[in-house]
Length: 496
Image (cartoon, rainbow, N blue to C red; front, side, top):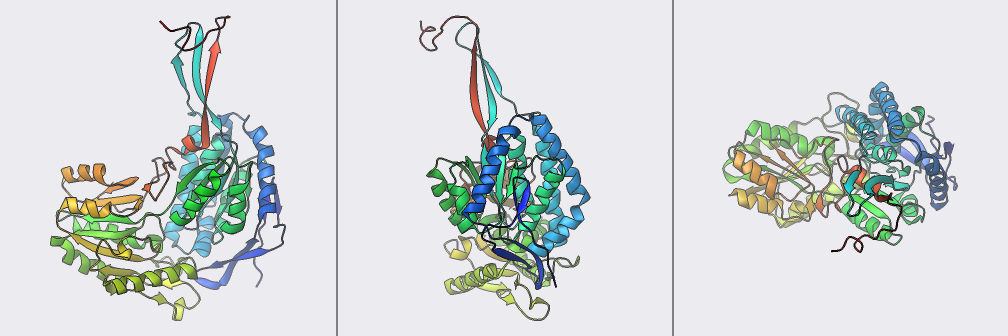
């Protein structure tokens, strides 16, 4: 059975990789379903794309920002028209269930609508001068050519977080999508092209991180890199980009804690825990991978949580009744299995799951059973290291202060949640939890596009997606206009 073949987008042309090599994109729920064949690009392809972006930038930066924004609005309408088609394609290439892939496309739709408004809000600042007859202001300028490296778990939403603010700010882009999920990025960029984006302003180079990604990092004409992925890879990205003085935005891993106090609405907390832990098959940087239970409610919560986890329907995400899809590839299943063994060896108690599903309807895919561990200590690796799979650790505590200390004890700091009816504790949690995102009476997943998204410690390097993205994709220029018709020297001629 034939399958579609896709090429890189370089300077408005669809071109194969210079090497002629390709990568097959397989449905993780059914490996017999080949989604498409994509280029396996190397440095030569990246160089072509960066050259095209540099040439396009010279023209694009001069387009008024409100006009750039109008293209985003047209792209939004195209995404709306194709939402169901794009969602189904995403489920085939990534595996998560249709309700979630529809949400992924919707997030790109929302991002386009939000960022388009910023085309008329690229505000600068005016301020009085210390000298007479002199005017002072500041303005935002585009960075230039930016490289975008995106992950597979949100293959349209996260590219939109990066592409749309970069474009409205006047930059030209080269995006390298994850090798597991390039099609959704192609669909996103195709919407921009159909909306009238000039050739070369966005270029797609598909390939592995070690080849295409590395070449993008090291290219001298790339001024900035925006990366979303693991903390281990992000550290290397930051180091390598620093060699050529690129500014870098890093959005990386998490080991997110949900705290359940004795006064919580337990049914609500159970709903949130189930969604936070097993939504996207646990393959979110914001996944609820630790649940911290106050000792008085731990037994009741645990029993109900495990019972519901066992009942989750696992399968092909194209089936509307399925609640948990496959993991994206065999390597992710192996990671989940490895952490199960680590947890057992450390003394954690396996309550359910803990194994790949490889028989019957699961034989052609990469499935892993929803897994819950109890008797977990804060020092255990299962409580400290990111699994990125449907594996959750249950811990107990005696006081609110102890819960906060446990939540903060890991290297990550992305998302946190607390379930409580005590408003004082809720506000203390907002203040004291070391994270970029905190939810009150909601799970650790569910960020909205117009708020800042990112984390602290090993999760990020201070930049944010959403609110704050324009700060990364623009640089400040100070402008002085002296209309005194004479030389005036700041700090000298105004001295007493």
